[in-house]
Length: 154
Image (cartoon, rainbow, N blue to C red; front, side, top):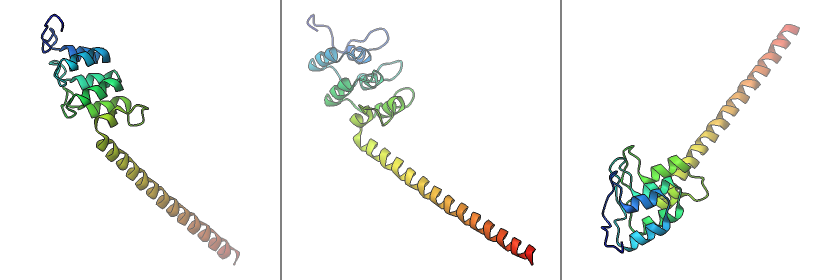
């Protein structure tokens, strides 16, 4: 940058310096590039991955926050049709200690937790219903057996 290199330059693989910084987990380099007005949303040509996706892949909470604060888009999809949120969920799930998915889209995470809780409530209700049905069948069997015993005794 000091030698007036273009901040938009790409290497042979189509990566900008910011993509390389994110891929390598270098928050310090990314900070310098963003301060020099690097585009926070460069897309790698081969994978269609953004710097935000690269930061997710290296599990860097610092880079993810930095890129989001710089205005990185969260809805761009890569060649596997995943956005940064989907990638974070696929790689680390919702229960990781530094939930990158929540950094990227807290609303989606809340909705996902609500969906999971609702699914659990439905499964528990089904289980209770199945238990009641099984208990009812057990009681009917016992009554039938007692009736058959009485009939055999007569």
